Amino acid sequence: MSPTFKKERGYTFKIYSNEEERIHIHVMKDNDEAKFWLEPHIELAHNYGFSSQEINEISKIIESYANDFREKYKQHIGKRVDD
Image (cartoon, rainbow, N blue to C red; front, side, top):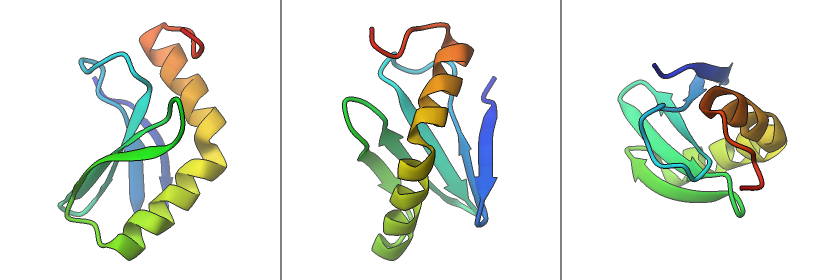
């Protein structure tokens, strides 16, 4: 199961339940996808198709919702953010 956390500006933000424990979020739009770490700080982990301008835009969105994404991740996975 991979719940959608947010949709904004055509981007879909979600996680995949069967991945590693480090808090992260996936971003999708059309056929492009990126993965961002949310801890210990926001950082691009992988990019498959987004331009650098789109990555900058996505980063800003993630920064503005980072705490909300972390909390939703914690609730979905069942782990504390500060583990």
